[in-house]
Amino acid sequence: MNNINNRTIGLNLAAAWLGLLLSVMVVVGSTFSVFFESIINEIDWSRGQISKAFSLFLLSTVIGLPLVGQLVDRFGSRRVIIPCVVVFGLTLCSFQFFHDKLHHFYLIFIIIGCIAGGTSTLPYFKVITRSFTRRRGLALGIANSGTGVGQFVLPYLAFLLISAYGWHNAYTFIGLLVMFITIPLVYFCLNEKYREKHTA
Image (cartoon, rainbow, N blue to C red; front, side):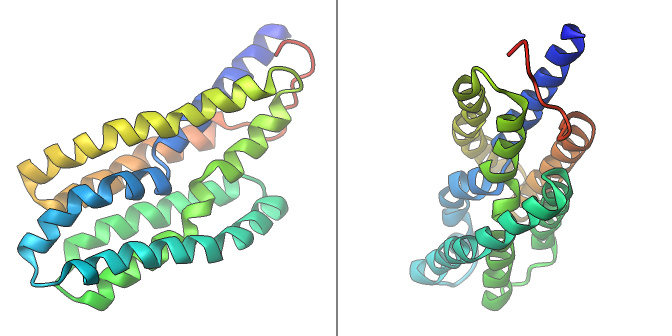
């Protein structure tokens, strides 16, 4: 029984760690400055116009978080994370059809901001806190370390992709990467019904 419990705990931690590594706040927050120079070199926009997109992203994140919290309470973490990851990934992929329209650029970051909470610590930590009755702080620390790893790795990945394929394709690749890794992991590994009582 303990082996089953330990396996479930490990899967929950792995799903949370990798999910947070590829969360909206990490992906967008850590790579925006990398994409910034490529965008401004290609499109005749001012730095202020491009920076405004990130401001709109942060504002829409703040507005969307309470709603995401309500949805997590009502439907559970997995049923919120997966749709938000799909929207996030597809929205990044939409840069393939981007044609220098400032309102399209802003809309992308507003949409991403609105669903950012669905890939944040909010839904993942709900599962972790219910999985652990002891060593909960350690578990949350391990899960949240994924954000630090993502902030270290993703800017470098974005730089390599932009250098090789351009910023449109780089965003598309990252969007597909987020969906193909996060969705199966959350669907198959994140167990919301489990509550650890003995081993953790």
